[in-house]
Each structure stands twice: as C-alpha cells, then as structure tokens.
Length: 404
Ligand code: LLP
Image 1 (cartoon, rainbow, N blue to C red):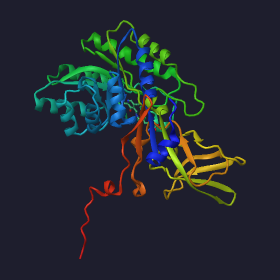
Image 2: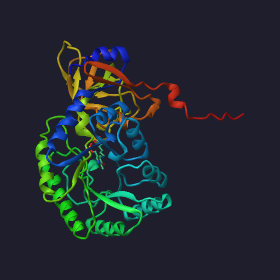
Image 3: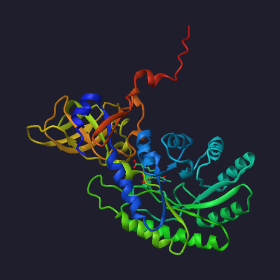
Image 4: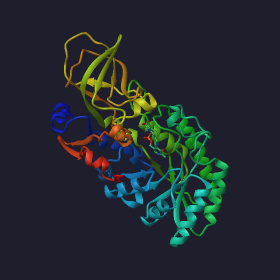
C-alpha cells in the first residue's frame, strides 16, 4: 500500500507511528495458511503492538491472543478476541491476575514454575473451578539470537526443565482444580534459523508422547513465537517450512498447534515518522537531531538494533556519515549510527522502518515526553488509532502536595 507519510506527518505531527494494517493481515494469512492440514490457532503476541485497532485487525481474522499481563488480556477482549482463544503467559503472575484470568474463562494459563502451579490451583479451588493450564517447558536449546531475547536455555528465567514439567503434569492431572490441556515452549525472538525450533518441537513432542502414555491429555501444542523478520539483510525462515517442521514433530499425535507470533505479524507493517530539528558537528562527528527519541523507539538503544532510515525528500549534496539522535539527555539516545545522509535541514522528514513491533509498546515518558500519535491505514484510509499524549495526560495521576 502506498502510504503518503508526508501528508500524514503534516496532518498529525511528528513523531508519528503509522501502521499498514493490510500488511499485518497479509502476514497473518500467510502464517495461518502454512498450517493448513493441521488443527491450528494463531495467538497474536499482544506485547509486540498492543494498540486496540491492531489487535482488532487480527481478531477479525479469527486470531487468538498471547498475553503476558491481565492488562493485555483485557485489551485483547476489548479488541474482540474471543476468551477461548486467549493464553496468559509470563513468569510472574500475581494472585489477582490469576483470579481475573480464570474468571474471564480464557483458553489456558501458561504456568512457568511449580510454585505458580500451586498458586493457580489454590485460586481455582477458591473459585470452585478447574483451571485449564499449560506448562512452559524450557527445552535447553540455543536459539542463536540476541542474548536479551533468547529464552530457551536453562540459564534463562523462563519455563521449567523437562523433569520438573513431568512432575508438574502428574501433579496437575491428580488435582481437582487443575486441567493440564496444553504444553508450551518459546525459545527466543527474532529467530532466523529453523533448526533450533525444529529441535525444540521434537523434544517437546516426545514429552507429549510420554505424557499421553500416562493419560495426561495434552491437546494444545504451543510453539511460542519468535519468527524473525527483515530489518536489514536477514535471511528468513520460510513460513511453510516452519509449519511443516512442527507438523512433522507432532506426527501421529492429535494436537492443535498453537503459535504466538508477534514481530512476524507487525514489525514491517509499522513506521516511525520523525522530523529533523537540527544538524550539528562535534569536531569531525556529524549528528542529525530529530524529534523522535529512545523513549519513542527503544530498540536501537537497548539492543543496538538496526532500523533502516529513509529520507522522505530528495536532497542535493554529498552524502556523509551521521548519527541520527533524539533530544533525550543520554548518549545512548540514538535511532541509527553512522548512516549515510545528504546534508539535512530542519523540517526534513525521516522514515524509520520496521517499527511496528516493540516500538510503541516499549515507549515511555522519559524526559516528560508525551508518547507519539498512532495512525492505522487500511484499504487506502488512514485514521488516528491513538492520539498523541498531552502534558495533562502525563501528569494526570500525580498529586502535588505543596508544603507551606
Ligand atoms: N510468546 C512468548 C512467550 C514470548 O515471550 C514472546 C516474546 C512471544 C511469544 C512473541 O515473540 P515474537 O514472535 O515477537 O518474536 N522487545 C524485544 C522482543 C522481546 C520478545 C519477548 N517475548 C525486541 O524488541 O526485539
């Protein structure tokens, strides 16, 4: 879809997040159809981009949701996701979150420790119900991605090891208040190699076989998220091969495949439009100061992540290397380092690509900066789907007790 970013910047101001909802739908359909021939449920990982209109786009496609807080569960419901398609994961759920999730009758709570299992059991008992659960198993497989987004090794805090998982399943099977319906793994994010996922799927499928043998009736095989996307020149996992590897792993088992993609569905459907404020030099070093900062898009600062930046206007003059930096008082506040740009001047617009996943959701109000406006474009029409925060929004919950 040809989005007129310059017009949108003029109309809604900058920094501005723009989402191509048609692209997001296309990604959903590609993945969903790769699982054809098997029972499958795609649960969009809401953390990647939790704008209600984005979630609603997937809800309309029949998607479920993978949530990591009760807030995300409520967002998903509000955006039209059916409760029986919602999974609640995360290493640290509070009692009240567990209670609310059970009351909302979601598909399953994904349990990440033995203590949590007992907590879920206790809360379910209080409510007089049986809680549908899955257990997140840590298969100890190296996903070969950035260490901060690698989750499937024993050194990571996520899930439980296979022996512990077995004990927990047996405990759950014998409990009046627990119904172990699913098994889950998620080895990491921005994965570009299929082998670690296939290996983890084989390990977990074998575990399902041994659980079925002792009458633990697992029905949902949740392979997590993690499919990588192109930021720069990455070679991606083919989605059909990905689905085939999972189908192969569970051959002979009667299971519904669940997957929890976030980035794959939204990253390249999102853009951050930012305006040049100034250019300056410190000695030989050139800086382009723009109106978006690390509070708007944290990924470059936090992970040294690469985001392609495109100049929206043609400019004369010789290109030279520059750092694209924001107005925040931190040396780590940059969107790109050492990229080639012609001489730029105040008002020039830059388009930051691949900003649809973990962009706005990781934004903050650091330096009392309001969070950006979000615009969603669908079938040729662009609408504000979250208005820019005002100063009043930022201080709304604060109380000023003036001392005499
Ligand atoms: N399922 C679970 C249990 C997860 O922990 C995650 C992501 C997903 C699904 C979705 O993963 P995806 O398909 O998006 O790779 N802020 C980081 C990414 C953190 C990912 C956390 N978990 C970034 O900006 O790269």
